[in-house]
Length: 141
Image (cartoon, rainbow, N blue to C red; front, top):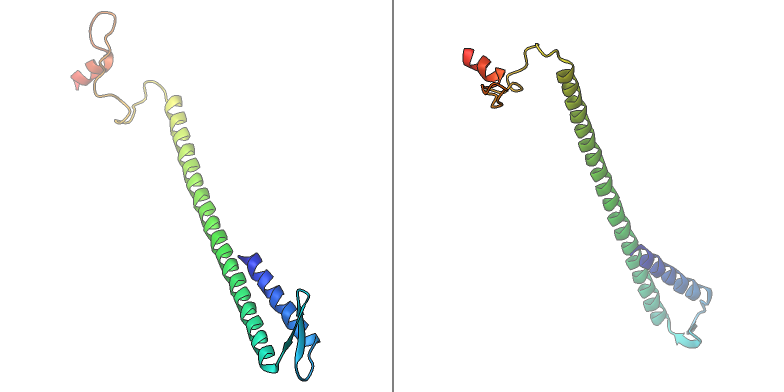
């Protein structure tokens, strides 16, 4: 869209420059694509107005294209920032979980564990056919 706007602006400027360079008093001869037209001052004014309108349309297209590009870049920047924040949050959570896992692994076996980590009952059987020690400990409570 920006390229089309720039092309329209260039065409309008070229047309205005051509008319300005050939400016004479009465009928003005204008040559377009190897054809010569004799334009009266009113026709010349209308051609200039048309060139001005084309110029304004071109400016409008350039502005619209630049606004669209700016909005797209802003949206992409916001998406990248939110993605970085999400990634930082996940990395922080991962470090926290790794630290907790390290603490659990390095804790001595006889140290009391939080209630969420110790099973209420242990369904494993031991060699003599009785329940595991955790179930016996739970029964003593």
